[in-house]
Image 1 (cartoon, rainbow, N blue to C red):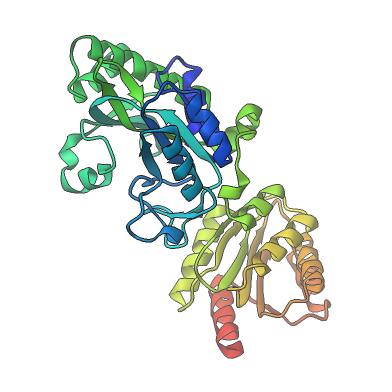
Image 2 (cartoon, rainbow, N blue to C red):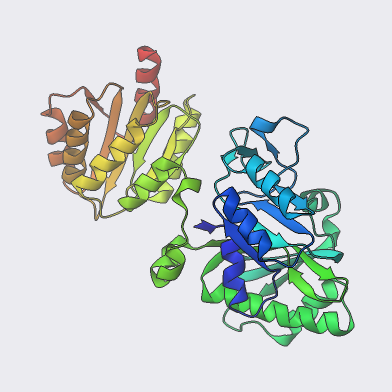
Length: 399
């Protein structure tokens, strides 16, 4: 789960981490009120979307010469003008794709006198089972170019969670940023605070870009992104309240209501599978047979008829879907339950695209019998390879 910049900063402030003063706004008037609460005379109006690259982004409705999603404002009137232009319009960045994202929230912050910009992030390194702290002296909007052109300027410090954040980690981070004296001490303290926040909240990723050194020699978090491990959110009801479903794909939001793992893709063959590994194999074999999957959908190991029906409806709600492949290996999940869900869903949605089903495992004979007696044009498959060939052929014949 991702949250907005202003929400992430509110969480970091609880750990004593320095951030510029700022206030969120949903309307132009609220943006003006936010600016009036700040000392000024320089304000920053920032679009709040779940994507990076906002500063270099462009609004679809405003033309290529308009300013991006992060704007300096030298007066309250300028804040009003910028808020008016930004709210309700579509911001396109390198991370949103061409469709962009509509800006529904703003964050108005106090201006900062910047002396230097740095980059700092933490993420889970699954290859080592450790937390990786990534730092660079080259923070700012061009960090992607730094990673591509001068990767030697990016340093990685790994932290064993069994040991935790130790003083030598803080020193390594501070020296990697080239800091000395009091700034070095501030950086060491900041590293410990960030690690504590990262682990306390079960973060997957915490990025600060830029971390700035002000002209009065203070370290401040100028911008941040934060995401959380979805499997751990039951431990953090306070974080769940920060979820903004308007930033998510509606189908993925609907899937989450039924505890379904769904991700929309660009193909035309809908997939319903149990188990992430089997789902990946199913998508691969569809592609090997000359077609492309329209989604990743894992119904899990304990799906009910209700969940299967919901999964079917979510797949068919995608207008790009021209056929569906159901691939179930019944262990904990019984094949007859899957079959009942398929039949129920197909009847409810008035199935109009080819459907191929491969069942194997517990109660497979009973499941196949249910499908055969359903009166629906369901094509059975003997194995995964057979299923992929049949659904691709069915879709081509229907075209």
